[in-house]
Image (cartoon, rainbow, N blue to C red; front, side):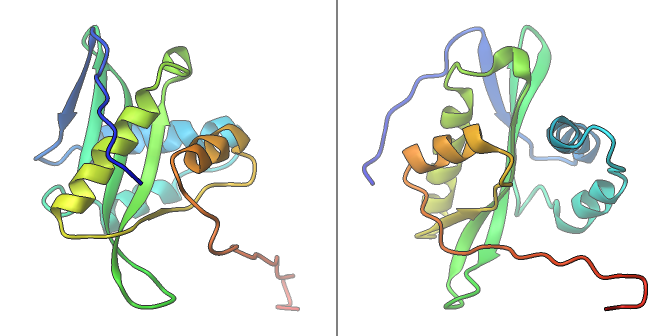
Amino acid sequence: MSEVSLALLPPYTITCSRSWQGGLLLKFFQAAYRELSPDQDLAHLAQTVTLFYQPDRSPVWFLTHASETVGCLWCGPGVDQTNGARTAYIFLVYIHPDHRRLGLATYLLHTAFRWAKAQGLTEIQLQVLIESEIAQVLYRNLGFKTRAYVLSRSLGSDGS
């Protein structure tokens, strides 16, 4: 896929966090999942941030509009489970609903593509929920292909 040159529209600004911003990252992580499952307990997301967020290895780009942070993309190193190759892995893309449909997620994703290339990586991966149909269209339009399905089975209290 060829390199695309995108400009971030003023008054939006983008910053890459070089210091611990786990609280802000968690806020966006929870907002993303709350939109899909408003009644779900999201306490487990704090553990995900604690385990995987390392500002020196897994950057987060924050989008700001009029001094309010309105979106982010969090990515880091990953491993392709089919062949063991090093990849970039996107943990989260989130844009506040009032700021969607302006190309901001596309801008963030291209920022992650450039970061991954600079790390010497040749592939970037992510997981998207079935319910996120609009996100799936965005990712397909940017060249992502379905390579796996995550299958889930609920277990009864007796393990059956």
